[in-house]
Length: 255
Image (tube, rainbow, N blue to C red; front, side, top):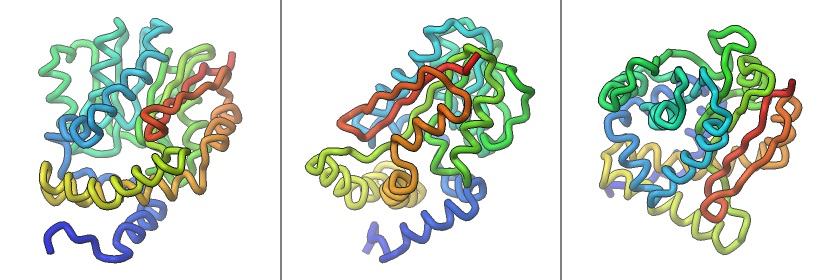
Protein backbone atom coordinates (compact mmCIF):
# COMPACT_ATOMS: atom_id res chain seq x y z
CA UNK A 1 0.00 0.00 0.00
CA UNK A 2 1.27 3.50 -0.82
CA UNK A 3 3.00 5.09 2.16
CA UNK A 4 3.57 1.86 4.09
CA UNK A 5 6.95 1.63 5.81
CA UNK A 6 8.71 -1.71 5.57
CA UNK A 7 9.75 -3.02 9.01
CA UNK A 8 13.29 -2.07 9.82
CA UNK A 9 13.74 0.30 6.87
CA UNK A 10 14.03 3.44 8.99
CA UNK A 11 16.42 1.74 11.40
CA UNK A 12 18.60 0.64 8.48
CA UNK A 13 18.64 4.24 7.23
CA UNK A 14 19.71 5.51 10.65
CA UNK A 15 22.55 2.97 10.75
CA UNK A 16 23.67 4.04 7.27
CA UNK A 17 23.50 7.71 8.26
CA UNK A 18 25.96 6.98 11.07
CA UNK A 19 28.28 4.87 8.93
CA UNK A 20 28.52 7.28 5.95
CA UNK A 21 26.95 10.55 7.11
CA UNK A 22 27.98 12.94 4.32
CA UNK A 23 27.01 10.59 1.50
CA UNK A 24 23.74 9.70 3.20
CA UNK A 25 22.80 13.36 3.73
CA UNK A 26 23.50 14.23 0.09
CA UNK A 27 21.35 11.33 -1.08
CA UNK A 28 18.52 11.94 1.41
CA UNK A 29 18.11 15.62 0.58
CA UNK A 30 18.73 15.41 -3.17
CA UNK A 31 15.05 15.63 -4.10
CA UNK A 32 14.02 18.29 -1.59
CA UNK A 33 15.56 21.73 -2.22
CA UNK A 34 12.96 23.56 -4.32
CA UNK A 35 10.18 23.24 -1.73
CA UNK A 36 12.29 22.57 1.34
CA UNK A 37 11.67 25.80 3.24
CA UNK A 38 7.94 25.77 2.49
CA UNK A 39 7.36 22.15 3.46
CA UNK A 40 9.59 22.38 6.55
CA UNK A 41 7.33 25.22 7.67
CA UNK A 42 4.15 23.32 6.82
CA UNK A 43 5.09 19.95 8.31
CA UNK A 44 6.35 21.56 11.54
CA UNK A 45 3.12 23.59 11.91
CA UNK A 46 5.14 26.79 11.65
CA UNK A 47 7.55 25.87 14.47
CA UNK A 48 10.64 25.59 12.25
CA UNK A 49 10.52 29.34 11.56
CA UNK A 50 10.19 30.14 15.29
CA UNK A 51 13.16 27.96 16.09
CA UNK A 52 15.30 29.53 13.38
CA UNK A 53 14.39 33.05 14.54
CA UNK A 54 15.41 32.16 18.09
CA UNK A 55 18.79 30.86 16.93
CA UNK A 56 19.48 33.86 14.70
CA UNK A 57 18.70 36.26 17.56
CA UNK A 58 21.61 34.91 19.61
CA UNK A 59 24.08 35.77 16.84
CA UNK A 60 22.54 38.90 15.32
CA UNK A 61 22.46 40.62 18.73
CA UNK A 62 26.28 40.72 18.76
CA UNK A 63 26.40 42.79 15.54
CA UNK A 64 28.95 40.55 13.79
CA UNK A 65 30.54 41.68 10.54
CA UNK A 66 31.27 38.23 9.07
CA UNK A 67 29.09 35.15 9.77
CA UNK A 68 29.32 31.51 8.73
CA UNK A 69 26.07 29.52 8.44
CA UNK A 70 26.88 25.79 8.42
CA UNK A 71 24.48 23.17 7.03
CA UNK A 72 22.68 26.09 5.44
CA UNK A 73 20.43 24.08 3.11
CA UNK A 74 18.52 26.37 0.75
CA UNK A 75 19.66 29.44 2.72
CA UNK A 76 16.69 30.23 4.99
CA UNK A 77 18.94 30.98 7.98
CA UNK A 78 21.62 32.50 5.74
CA UNK A 79 19.14 35.05 4.42
CA UNK A 80 17.72 35.71 7.89
CA UNK A 81 21.23 36.50 9.18
CA UNK A 82 21.83 38.89 6.29
CA UNK A 83 18.45 40.56 6.82
CA UNK A 84 18.99 41.07 10.54
CA UNK A 85 22.61 42.26 10.41
CA UNK A 86 24.86 44.25 8.10
CA UNK A 87 27.30 41.33 8.00
CA UNK A 88 28.73 39.47 5.07
CA UNK A 89 27.39 35.91 5.36
CA UNK A 90 28.72 32.65 3.96
CA UNK A 91 26.40 29.67 3.75
CA UNK A 92 28.07 26.24 3.68
CA UNK A 93 26.48 22.89 2.90
CA UNK A 94 27.53 19.41 1.80
CA UNK A 95 24.74 19.16 -0.80
CA UNK A 96 25.19 20.72 -4.25
CA UNK A 97 21.41 20.56 -4.78
CA UNK A 98 20.74 22.52 -1.60
CA UNK A 99 23.39 25.11 -2.46
CA UNK A 100 21.99 25.58 -5.96
CA UNK A 101 18.57 26.37 -4.55
CA UNK A 102 20.19 28.51 -1.86
CA UNK A 103 21.90 30.65 -4.49
CA UNK A 104 18.54 31.18 -6.20
CA UNK A 105 16.88 32.11 -2.89
CA UNK A 106 19.65 34.56 -2.04
CA UNK A 107 19.28 36.20 -5.44
CA UNK A 108 15.49 36.45 -5.11
CA UNK A 109 15.95 38.08 -1.70
CA UNK A 110 18.27 40.72 -3.20
CA UNK A 111 21.16 39.67 -0.95
CA UNK A 112 23.72 38.44 -3.47
CA UNK A 113 26.03 41.37 -2.74
CA UNK A 114 26.55 40.23 0.87
CA UNK A 115 25.91 36.47 0.78
CA UNK A 116 28.11 33.72 -0.69
CA UNK A 117 27.46 29.97 -0.85
CA UNK A 118 30.24 27.40 -0.40
CA UNK A 119 30.34 23.62 -0.79
CA UNK A 120 31.93 22.04 2.27
CA UNK A 121 31.70 19.82 5.35
CA UNK A 122 31.06 20.98 8.88
CA UNK A 123 33.62 18.45 10.10
CA UNK A 124 36.42 19.99 7.99
CA UNK A 125 35.83 23.67 7.32
CA UNK A 126 37.85 25.33 4.53
CA UNK A 127 38.62 28.42 6.63
CA UNK A 128 41.45 29.60 8.86
CA UNK A 129 41.19 29.93 12.64
CA UNK A 130 39.15 32.88 13.92
CA UNK A 131 37.87 33.76 10.42
CA UNK A 132 34.34 34.72 11.51
CA UNK A 133 32.67 37.00 14.04
CA UNK A 134 29.73 34.60 14.44
CA UNK A 135 28.52 31.16 13.39
CA UNK A 136 25.27 29.22 13.19
CA UNK A 137 24.59 25.58 12.39
CA UNK A 138 21.26 23.87 11.84
CA UNK A 139 20.25 20.19 12.02
CA UNK A 140 23.88 19.16 11.60
CA UNK A 141 24.92 16.84 14.42
CA UNK A 142 22.86 13.84 13.30
CA UNK A 143 24.79 13.82 10.01
CA UNK A 144 28.37 13.68 11.30
CA UNK A 145 30.38 10.73 12.55
CA UNK A 146 31.84 12.56 15.58
CA UNK A 147 29.62 15.33 17.00
CA UNK A 148 32.18 16.43 19.61
CA UNK A 149 34.97 16.83 17.06
CA UNK A 150 32.58 18.68 14.74
CA UNK A 151 31.60 21.17 17.45
CA UNK A 152 35.29 21.79 18.12
CA UNK A 153 35.91 22.37 14.41
CA UNK A 154 33.04 24.86 14.22
CA UNK A 155 34.38 26.75 17.24
CA UNK A 156 37.84 26.87 15.68
CA UNK A 157 36.83 29.31 12.94
CA UNK A 158 35.11 31.81 15.28
CA UNK A 159 37.14 34.64 16.78
CA UNK A 160 37.39 34.86 20.59
CA UNK A 161 34.23 36.44 21.97
CA UNK A 162 32.22 35.67 18.83
CA UNK A 163 28.73 34.14 19.19
CA UNK A 164 27.83 30.59 18.14
CA UNK A 165 24.28 29.26 18.00
CA UNK A 166 22.66 26.05 16.81
CA UNK A 167 19.28 24.51 16.14
CA UNK A 168 18.54 20.79 16.36
CA UNK A 169 15.47 18.63 16.64
CA UNK A 170 14.93 17.06 20.06
CA UNK A 171 12.73 14.55 21.89
CA UNK A 172 10.08 16.04 24.23
CA UNK A 173 10.87 15.16 27.87
CA UNK A 174 7.24 14.88 29.04
CA UNK A 175 5.91 11.31 28.61
CA UNK A 176 2.60 12.53 27.21
CA UNK A 177 4.11 14.89 24.65
CA UNK A 178 6.82 12.36 23.84
CA UNK A 179 4.11 9.81 22.96
CA UNK A 180 2.36 12.36 20.73
CA UNK A 181 5.70 13.26 19.12
CA UNK A 182 6.44 9.57 18.52
CA UNK A 183 3.05 9.05 16.86
CA UNK A 184 3.51 12.11 14.65
CA UNK A 185 7.07 11.34 13.56
CA UNK A 186 6.50 7.62 12.95
CA UNK A 187 2.99 7.50 11.50
CA UNK A 188 1.77 10.92 10.38
CA UNK A 189 4.89 12.74 9.16
CA UNK A 190 5.93 10.21 6.49
CA UNK A 191 2.43 10.15 4.96
CA UNK A 192 2.04 13.95 5.23
CA UNK A 193 5.41 14.33 3.53
CA UNK A 194 4.37 12.00 0.75
CA UNK A 195 1.09 13.84 0.15
CA UNK A 196 2.60 17.33 0.18
CA UNK A 197 6.05 16.72 -1.28
CA UNK A 198 6.18 13.30 -2.93
CA UNK A 199 8.38 10.21 -2.40
CA UNK A 200 11.51 12.16 -1.40
CA UNK A 201 9.63 13.76 1.49
CA UNK A 202 8.21 10.37 2.48
CA UNK A 203 11.77 9.05 2.79
CA UNK A 204 12.79 12.01 4.96
CA UNK A 205 9.66 11.70 7.11
CA UNK A 206 10.25 8.00 7.64
CA UNK A 207 13.87 8.57 8.62
CA UNK A 208 13.48 11.63 10.84
CA UNK A 209 11.87 10.23 14.00
CA UNK A 210 14.17 7.21 14.44
CA UNK A 211 17.19 9.39 13.63
CA UNK A 212 16.29 11.94 16.32
CA UNK A 213 15.57 9.24 18.92
CA UNK A 214 18.83 7.43 18.20
CA UNK A 215 20.86 10.62 18.38
CA UNK A 216 19.50 11.65 21.78
CA UNK A 217 20.00 8.19 23.24
CA UNK A 218 23.68 8.48 22.31
CA UNK A 219 24.08 12.23 22.82
CA UNK A 220 21.55 13.62 25.32
CA UNK A 221 21.26 17.35 25.94
CA UNK A 222 23.68 17.42 28.96
CA UNK A 223 26.30 15.70 26.78
CA UNK A 224 25.76 18.31 24.05
CA UNK A 225 26.19 21.24 26.43
CA UNK A 226 29.35 19.68 27.86
CA UNK A 227 30.72 19.14 24.33
CA UNK A 228 30.24 22.85 23.61
CA UNK A 229 32.17 23.78 26.74
CA UNK A 230 34.92 21.25 25.96
CA UNK A 231 35.25 22.87 22.51
CA UNK A 232 36.16 26.18 24.12
CA UNK A 233 32.73 27.82 24.05
CA UNK A 234 31.79 29.88 27.10
CA UNK A 235 28.46 31.06 28.52
CA UNK A 236 26.70 28.03 27.03
CA UNK A 237 22.91 28.14 27.40
CA UNK A 238 19.98 26.43 25.76
CA UNK A 239 16.25 26.69 25.25
CA UNK A 240 13.85 23.84 24.58
CA UNK A 241 11.27 24.93 22.02
CA UNK A 242 7.74 23.70 21.23
CA UNK A 243 7.37 21.40 24.25
CA UNK A 244 10.83 19.96 23.64
CA UNK A 245 10.61 19.22 19.91
CA UNK A 246 13.36 21.73 19.11
CA UNK A 247 16.58 22.68 20.85
CA UNK A 248 18.46 25.98 20.47
CA UNK A 249 21.95 26.19 22.02
CA UNK A 250 24.17 29.25 22.11
CA UNK A 251 27.38 30.59 23.60
CA UNK A 252 30.49 32.64 22.79
CA UNK A 253 33.95 31.53 21.74
CA UNK A 254 36.16 31.58 24.79
CA UNK A 255 38.58 34.55 24.79
